[in-house]
Image (cartoon, rainbow, N blue to C red; front, top):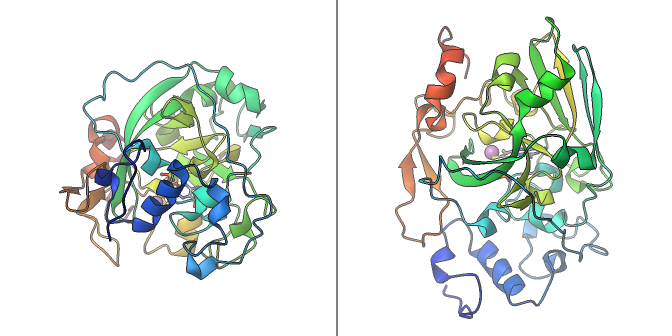
Length: 337
Ligand SMILES: Nc1nc2c(c(=O)[nH]1)N[C@H]1C(S)=C(S)[C@@H](COP(=O)(O)O)O[C@H]1N2
Ligand SMILES: [Mo]
């Protein structure tokens, strides 16, 4: 199918990728100014499987992001960034629906202010940050990172944020702090997937994730509050989410309300659901296949067209081995996948 796109539009025919003619149509309609993101819920092109599950009565307001001040990433400009429109419309955020298009459509009224993020557990100075603290407590920097989903697609995203290590230093972890447990907001009123099993993909909520303390302290580990120069939209985890670029995307938990320093390795959402498929470590590893598919290559989401050669080799630790491989040098990575 070929859809005519107005030349004034930001969408180009080259933006049409195989993953979704559907998303492209939705963007086309938006770019032409007909409808807000939520207005298509009841329309013919909303996803059939879940149509009618949610109330669209006040889903017409589009979320407002604001510009951030940050230090630009000059070191990673050779990475070709995935177009912003794709980063904010092809998402995994099951709290707002398990289909790629649903988070952007069902999250536009998500309330991120007020917000509280509590850092507690095995530390000297537990703190709670308010919404404004998230963007003002630390100097913000851009990090252009590869994001590799366990489903074998990937993007390059210019995140904005600060190192998790800086935040953890503030609370001063004690010697019992061996792991870090992260938790997403639990609010079924706002997150329809949390109370509707079919919409929410059958996973347990709240979504929880974890890192070993050395992984959490690694300088690459980012608390992200923005992307493409602005605060995060809800579908990408507003107001604050984790980004761990050498691990599969499911470790990068969104819309975090709690960070807890703990003694034992915590349970994590996908590992609980299917431990043979999703490990605690989840380091990107082309040599360790998912039981149902190969992890040797990935489809990079680019601005390329349908026939663009966007199938690329997956790199160990997603290409960040130099910075992170030392943390696993005595571990059997086929066992600790
Ligand atoms: N709370 C929560 N965090 C989440 C998810 C989710 O469903 N819920 N999905 C994860 C998965 S599988 C991926 S690939 C990334 C996707 O991030 P993005 O939508 O910003 O690209 O978010 C991760 N964080
Ligand atoms: Mo993912």
